Length: 373
Image 1 (tube, rainbow, N blue to C red):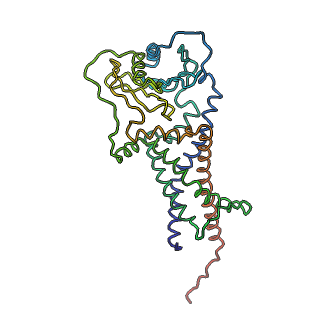
Image 2 (spheres, rainbow, N blue to C red):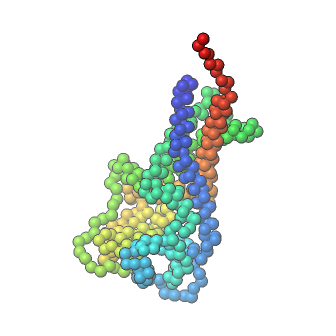
């Protein structure tokens, strides 16, 4: 590679990193923190996540619970019911109404064990920063752009690293000063982790920005699965218990992962189901119901959805590390730290280079000025 071409690649790498690389640093470090913060949150707040001992009671009526919540949070409030996934866990209800946040209820009695607003927990604040930069849909689009930024940085970094002789040396010199160690860590770490970091960032972009799933399905030539049309007619709302029973009957081998209730009767109601072979913890199989009659309008098993949506069952647990259990989550936390370290060492190298150039400029001797005689 000629010196001029190498200089062009170096400028591309450096200024892309300085201009937009901070997105990757924030994403990586907050991702690592989330892996630790979630179990720590459960450990510090057991009342929210562990059902208290209660005397035997009849099965909890979702309809009675909905009516109680509507009285407190308003008739226009929407509720996402997340039944316990494990024995002894609480029922979580995400409230979107006059108040927005999460309730933690006893799954048998509906007794409240705790609540917190959507911005009152460290986990929610970290998740908002990690998934949307606290900018909602705008932030999600920016993070999708960060995936393209990483592609530029990875390609330009590999081009700059590419050795003339093989096999290449992957030795990191730790005894030759901080700058040399930063250079070796940045160069070799970027090459060694390029692929797995690329997978992590690409899956994060997919989760952050929904249009990507639609593009994937269209490229595959498959129609995007959408909510069915509601039959004409009117009538009172069906009880949530009848709706839940209809969803369960549509997938007898599954369990309800998320019951997405809204008070609107002019649109289908969705219930996400988790079937045994679905790797997504909340399940991606879906049942669409008529909220007035509890009639099943459509049912889609997760592996029959369009490719862009179907990928979510793999991408989400892969990105969060849940696909590999504790080892997978530890690997995700490590990758986030690696991404932060690559950004940090890159800043160190840029700063050291800038200091050296400024110092050289100050030490340059003054040029003599010749006067005209």
